Length: 132
Image (cartoon, rainbow, N blue to C red; front, side, top):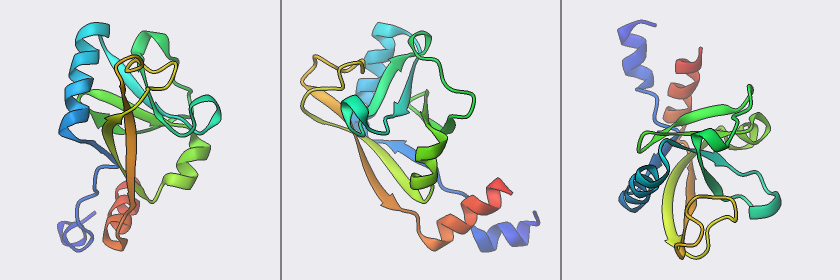
């Protein structure tokens, strides 16, 4: 893609970012458990909570979509869920409450939480151009 085309479209935004509070909890969980990863739950047991696992305890599916990394931890979701969320920017945050029963933050009286917004038209064009 030409430089001129890139400047018209803009740089592709990150699909997932984390708040300072989330980054602090990620650092704590990484220190305690080694490398971790996130998988955005699509329902079932813990609703639509972002789930945090030790990398050795969770097998990422061949078709799972990597949205990016937060605090050095990769963040994935299933392909079917990505189809619903592909136009959504995610912010990983931490709120009071119980974590998902299988998620590493469980038992700390805080849990990971996703805040979302739709990408702007310009961001969507940039993402589409980056994928091409």
